Image (tube, rainbow, N blue to C red):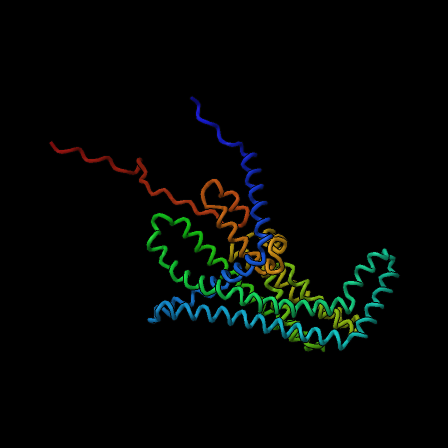
Amino acid sequence: MAPPQGLAPSTRTLLFLSAAVVVLAGVHAAREVLAPLFLAAVLVIIVHPIRHPLEHRGWNRAAATTVVIVVVYLILLVLIAMLTFAGIQFAGLVQEYLSELQDAVGGATSWLATLGLDQDAVSSVTDAFQPSQLLGLATSISGAALGVATTLFVVVTYVIFMSVDAARYDGAHVHFGATQGGVLRRATTFNIGVRRYFVVSASFGAVVAIIDGLALWALGVPAPAVWAILAFVTNFIPNIGFVIGVVPPTILALVVGGWPLALAVVAVYSAVNVVLQVLVQPKFVADAVNITLTLSFVSVIFWTFVIGPLGAILAVPLTLLTRALLLQGGPETAWYSWLSGEDLPKPVPDRSPDPELTPDPEPAAD
């Protein structure tokens, strides 16, 4: 009897895509629970290495785990403080310059109409910059801080459990390195990639925030610290964070200094943010985590749709996790790994001796 034939490649592809749609639909439906879980996991992965020098100095596991938990919550509290400060200051600025904003929007509406643009297009553009919309944006920033604070209470249990389990999993290589070496290597690669990504993003974000803040202060734009914070936070959104960060200070510059000051702000952001965030940083990120520029850009849109706004910040780590789970590192998935940006393993050189250079064995003595 002939052996049963396997599924055709096209059938396997359709089954895989169907299963992926079902899984992603479930993740989207459970995003309120899963998004804090992903955030907690990423924070624990970032902070976890600080336990190793503590344990080497004689700290017990419980004490080192406590330090990890405390550092994670310090990061969250700093994020909440930054977003709260930015939201309150932004809302105050909108209220303070309310009449000027209304005049600026009216002038922009008339100017766009003189260009012959369709009235619906003009209305769509100007409505986005109405003071009520900007006030709603400021409220949403404060709401984001409140959401992070609410997430803090949801994440607390996740962080504690994950930190405790992470200490236990440190011994996995010792116990299962021989049998589960491939899985452990992929997990290690994923953890290193997440840390490298956030180190690169935080480093570039700090540089961009400092330069933007000083430039806005020199130009006389109100509340430069708020826009510096916004530049730092949006830097964690690959490729499109620059656009989110430049709009509010440009509008405020238009109100207080007219078009010359607004264009000066755009020029500064273009010179600094476009060069660093759009041209230089993605290359560093791609090299740090072995992911293509196209995939990093698409991942922001994709994961934001799947799990909400937090997906924009966690897009690259979630993409790395998906690659680690689906692409198992074997020859059958090497092509897809290479397409995603991962380097192919270097071929092992053949150490077998050349038969032509190997001397003939001595004849056995009689």
